[in-house]
Length: 344
Image 1 (cartoon, rainbow, N blue to C red):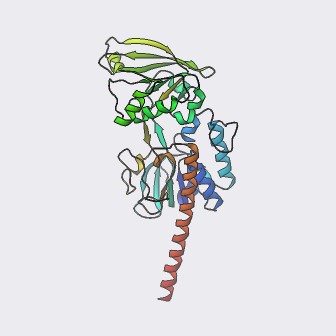
Image 2: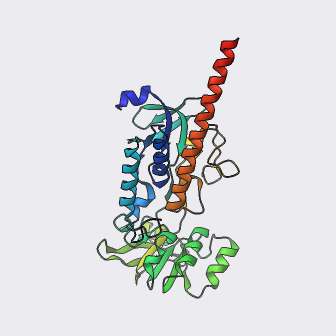
Image 3: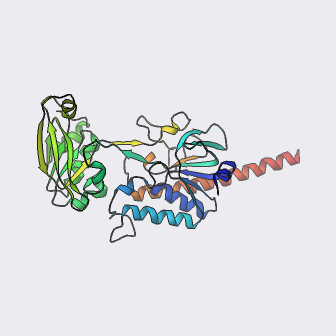
């Protein structure tokens, strides 16, 4: 289908996002003959493409590369008839159906049902070499990659609940875990802070930040350069020309625990409910339905807690099944309305 046909057709289902949740939704929707359009967005494949090896996804006892898993999922969805389109949604008009999605390239797609599977992007800290080493010893997910660091000394960057969760999980595998925080007190909740402080394998480096990551893609992370200042926020001090202390440390892994940002900007002016952090809210109960009839959520965009490939895939299939049932209900209601008009 060319760009003109895409814009002139009212689609049954458009899936925004091509990570595990979006791909799972695409497989189920395509098998239901809904001919879904999948918008790949600016980061096709999502967060999983940053993981070199996935060991905890069902059906791959030897593990599988994150990129390979995404590619397999895309091929599977295409096999059943899903069509992939590169583009990001700038604005969603959800006041009436068909919904209208304005894309970054200027095109507009219309759809009866919408599945939002745009994920959540991990915050990075701007350390030197983080682009090169993300997925090669640098990670944003301890539950995904922590087991690769058995016996290592690792750093966790951050001071909130996310960082404490990462540190506590990593302490099961690593020889030592050092939490690096730019201030001298934690932002984490009291209970999470206490658990981390009381753990024998977790240490804290206060008023310290990560400046540079050492290593290569062949060797992985081998160390880091830290900067510290007694008044905190040492990178700001460094940028303003003040003296800060530099220290090189040997570590086998670094984990960012500074939170995630759900990719829901295009929904901010709609009736879809978002929480205070921007995560999409689904209705109560076992459903992917949202406050807007015909809009469904799947994956990390509506899940700030688990953030696993397998849970994202599960909610993706749920969203497709919910969308299929909803479309069938709409068709029945439409037929009934036509029959009533004919009787009149």
